[in-house]
Length: 264
Image (cartoon, rainbow, N blue to C red; front, side, top):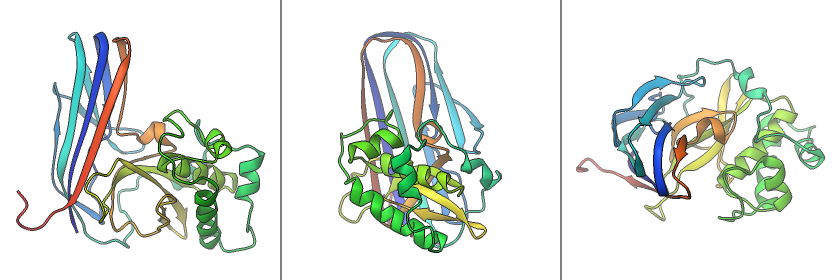
């Protein structure tokens, strides 16, 4: 399957920003299951390319001139070549992802949730956990924000893909199971307008296994991976700091289409 992606992020400020630095994880890394046909970042200035501590492709954009807005666009085509193969781009020990992170701590309620069905095989247990999380936290846009952690989101009983993933990761780490946060895109047959998506990957039996709690699937056949980390803070597509600017407004739109051979 070939996917065509266009992801536009726009920041506007009520006052001039004197200086800003943006950390962009907007470029997918090729692997056995995703072949990058072309990919471009349209940015206001040249950005430095590097790899972060999780081996994600990272661009650092620094704007030294006063500005009241930033526009960032990522666009390209990716072929999802084998929905069931494991990625071959892992250079870190899976044990790195067994650590608790700022957004994946657990309270007694999450510990009880994590310890449900301990007598069942691990992957079967995690499937039941995924189902329980979605039942306890129906998908509700606007119920949380990017600063919400697993504990507060689960207590609130509502959330989005980021929250579902954080709760799932918290429960995995309570059990000592390495699991990582994944940011990326999801193609949907029902809509071309899909926001950035998040899901989890669990290390078990020598490989990474997908758990998309929000969509209740373990098959990443429509998923395009951008970055991985311990939680959202490590893998979010855009994160930055600024001096000045006053009140900030953000608009982000991701469009994911299935493209054919005649795509221009």
